[in-house]
Length: 310
Image 1: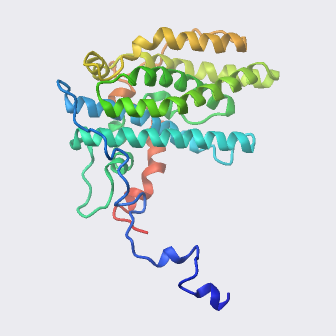
Image 2: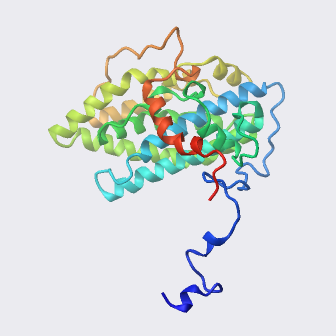
Image 3: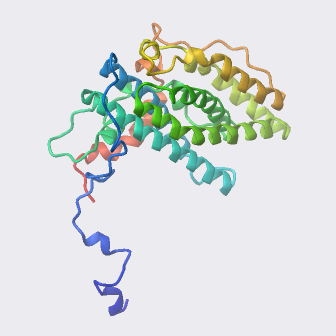
């Protein structure tokens, strides 16, 4: 190391470590608000608590699936797919961030209470400090990763459904939801097309790739009806012109999936849906054990150091 390397006026990758700018370890305490400049007023006639619950549903779908896809980093079949899956995960994190912020802005009461003086932004508090029963994602998002065929099948199913939902949501009476949907359309269209191409490729590839794809489809299919089932929160907000009733998407998503299945020469599985408990599913906070394990890994450092700074 030379004297030049130690010169405080010389640009250095390490210089920032000497500055006490007090960032929270999991995000900047004074980070830019992703909803800055937007009208956060809850639309007339809409219950703020219901709007927040709806945003948590869509935000948790994106957050949990993003974490699952991030687990593929350095494990995908080749570098191109590794980067593609990482980018899809980043797209979903961006959507989750906007939706969790919208939930907190609509109803601050949904944000977990943290130790006094903790510099945690609302979006991070919702991601890192809720228990599994407080998450509202569909159960398909939380299923542990299988092989590459399973991941492509899951991304195909969830992105086909989510794209149809976002297209309808661009007409929401809530300007924030409408803007989030408009931003996410191109992202999720890519997710769907990427997964659909791989679905067909694997189905028409080798005997082994086709076998794995069919196993993946049969394993995930019992979770598919949950995406199109209507929760009371979704029904009420759809009636208010703010949300989308997922049941109304059935014909559209079936048409798209049928096109992909036909191209892949794959038949729809004839399997019963995965039951809930007394009618409760992921939207009600009823999850598989897999979500608890996912959150334990995702939240452990934040919970151990709620005042952590770097």
